[in-house]
Length: 351
Image 1 (cartoon, rainbow, N blue to C red):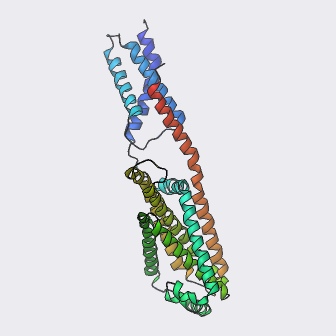
Image 2: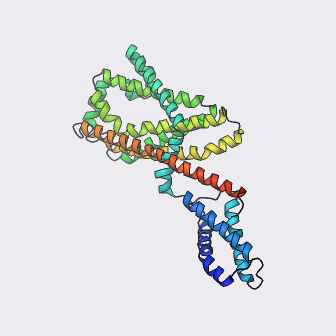
Image 3: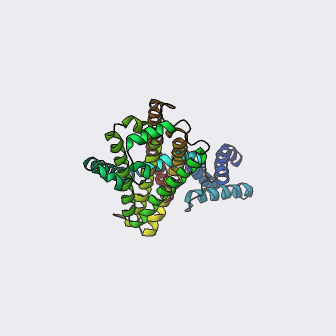
């Protein structure tokens, strides 16, 4: 084949430079990713550079061009056919705003089961207290919940003005620590093939249902709605997500319908478990602050209507945040297409 080498280089130089620029960026930034369109462009540049290398192999007069193209093609080949996963740079905001809700959505079935178990416990606790009010002495875990609800409300409202003076930080830290321990315990109990996680979720539901019915039967529904939602709208979902993680771990241990080995199943769910439980920790920090600095203040110091509205706003914002999980489907589809395109390269001959 006879070609005008000088003109050939002038025409092809821009494509080589574009490929080299992409390779430099990929090698400099391990977290760099490309959408499907750019992946196809990268493949085209690689094919073109490979074809150009074949065309000038016989030109002994320009060995430096041949060496340059050999290096360029070798680097591109290494990026395309590399089997290992590249490490990704941790980006806290990206993890919080995207990875966390997307992980929640991807494991939504486990959350639905966690919610169903807790609601079952709520129903049981409610019915138990309605049929036998004396059951409160057995069900309630804390002494202040075992007494008369009307007296407790009156006492709380009288003490609301100087509530936790000088102790808010200590009280909120205690709440955060306790709730985080319960959440980690819910996750860890997944090692019992989910039995322990189910019992913990059900028992929490029993307490929640019993407390709610106890205050409503005493005519203190307004106090209940002003006391529980400000922190409960975050704390309760956090516990449910911890249960979601525990059930996910249990599913990996049991491995229904999954031919992968136990080690591979655990390895596959570990990133999601870590993401879920760290997300729970963040939610519980916020819930602890709200419970200490807001939930403990009642009328006449703080109107119940404001507290109820605050709790509803929190719940709506949390639901909208977790709803971002739907954005993953489009991303996952494009990523899957890119992987399929990459596999196809291996078998396609150069044009």
